[in-house]
Amino acid sequence: MKNIRKFVRTLLANPFLTQSPKMSALARDSLSAADPIKGDRKPPTLADYAGLDHPPRATDLANSNKEDIGAVKSMSIKVEDGQDGTVPGFLHIPATAPKPHHGHAAILLSGAGGGVVGPSSMYLSMADKIASLRNGIHVLRLDYRYPARNKYCIRDVLAAMDHLEETYSINKFILVGWSFGGAPVFTVGGSDRRVIGCATVASQTAETDGVRNLAPRPVLLLHGKADKTLSPSCSERLYAMYGSKGDRRIHLFDGDDHALTRSALRAEEMLTDFIMGCAGTKVAKDEQEKIVQKELVGSEKRVELMKKGGDLRGEERIE
Image (cartoon, helix red, strand yellow):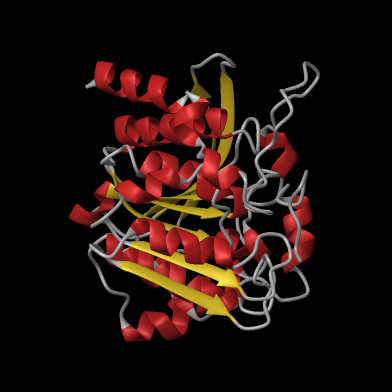
């Protein structure tokens, strides 16, 4: 098994297999970096993200749920490749006792700037919510060592999957990505059968050919119609690339931007329902009201926390 995974990593590291020449010719379909990694560029560490374990209103969730919201374990995951190092992340561990579906985990990936809170800080909120459900699963908010460089980002994702499998016996994964994050999501999802579902928010189309190999595994595509960073036509193209022989869903939000700032809570609900559906369980009605529909990050804090969480570095934008 390890030899097979090593072979897959070698294939994925080939840029000619992760980027379509046809797609690279499209206008504004990508936030992938074209410049080489600079020698003085140091990957982020956990110290860069102090105070971002839980969303600001996590205690509201605990009070309404009358249960623990679950623990958050900060971790530095070792990655072995040409740029050996570690990638930081925050693992939200379910508050409930272990159950069969705890063999599932969601991995949440940000965009071209990296980061750990996601578009409009949705990841910070969703992770606590999913871990608080009665049938909750593990959720990993994962950064990148070298954001916007898919060759290295896919290694980060694979290293995280291997770590969760070896440490927590998790072998089924749902991948979620924002913007550039669609590249590692669909590259890994299209080649690794441990991935059982993929979702994206405002994804690019460059380096996403793996979406063609996902069916019949489910895919959810969310995008703002007023996105000025990556056109909603990117998600429409991904929808077509996926094909008609599986479970594909797309939702375009009227008047919303690249980070879905106007529809963040609704997007959280849709992503949470999708993730839990992939894990084989449905969110109960009472939990929808008490947990999923709770706004754990106020609208006035969503962009501020994105800046603190590193999600707006580099080429990433709100608009």
